[in-house]
Length: 534
Ligand SMILES: Nc1ncnc2c1ncn2[C@@H]1O[C@H](COP(=O)(O)OS(=O)(=O)O)[C@@H](OP(=O)(O)O)[C@H]1O
Image: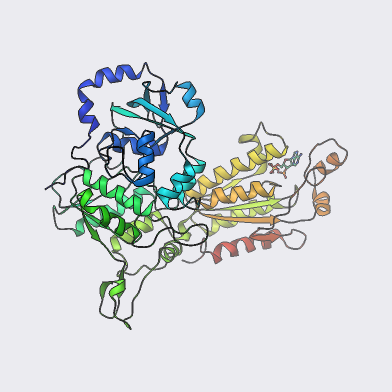
């Protein structure tokens, strides 16, 4: 039998407000509006569909203080995470936010009206206190604390909601059935930066579903914006699951843990989350099923809770870091660690390096030889690999991407950022991108590395041919013109070139041929498995 919702009544605001849909929809167009952030959108959906019962809106100041200080709403009901609608001064002014004001809340993706908020109060939260109480420390190494101080706006608006419509979802919409015994309920809202994306996670769950006897398990997705708040987050998850009718809730080791703080120490103990949910389980009305960390014993081919393994028994484990390394390099992942079906899905979204894209970023003075190296490298990569190879040459980039830009520091930085964006997208799609701008500024190059590395390989190659040599090699005489003052801000003459200290490779056209320079770049790619045998 399904569990009763937290507070006794499921606050399904869609159902409650369905009869006045036409009136609310018409009124929405006449009201000032607020465009929600991604997190607010997730929170709103779970308020409207009853996932956050007993909440019927965003927390007002009294509820907020109660939740922060002692995990209680004004009504006395348990609630562990503040669900707030943060706004800035401009929004307060533009929408004239004050008690009784009605405001339409808009979906940030398509500006559809989702709900009408009746404002109760506008207040300034004490963020440091919220961080200490809710997340255990005012330490920005915690992603939710970072969010609080750097992304969340200065004020909160409290108020009740009337539902107009649910946010649209385009993925996994065909999944609805209610007779399951086991609810597999993965979060598909916002998780921790760097987590495996939700499409991959859902594909993994789908690959696992056939492992359950027919009709025993049902997969349903939870559009929750996680805060990684460990123990308080676990209590919150328990309340949300109860609102989904669930009677038992599995809490594993380090549930919703954000990892280590700025001192390198874990934010929470591995079983803090289990302990806090256990403490409130009667009040929540949900049974906790605690899971210990499980390890594999190869000699007996069985799995055991890590703390129950007798002394002297050999155990095996693969850490998250090691798993990511194996996925990256294409190394085997043994069957005792995960089902082959799961590994297959993970490998599709984490192809080995031989199938990943990369960018070769050549930087150096005009006439340093970087263009010749870039062209020869393109030929070499075309014959070497099956990837598509894109060459972003300076003159094409300046003509096509950056035609309005000049050579001030600002313009050069924008020019490099645009090339990094394009190269990053090509890299993400599995291509090889070669860019060859002068790129004289260290910070812009570092930023480019950051942008591109998220999507695949990045190699900074400094073509370090000395200025005198570049001047000698310069057939167009631009250096001469620059010396005469006919060209302003010319790199090397009257504009700086910051020598990179983080180059992955340094080549010099006076000391090696173009082919040798290309060979060295290819060797670098081979060493990391991007090209060559694999
Ligand atoms: N003031 C000034 N400083 C440097 N370079 C100048 C300047 N004015 C024009 N040019 C010609 O533009 C080419 C360099 O453009 P980049 O896009 O590579 O420069 S940057 O990375 O944005 O600094 C470069 O040509 P290539 O080296 O052939 O690409 C320069 O000849």
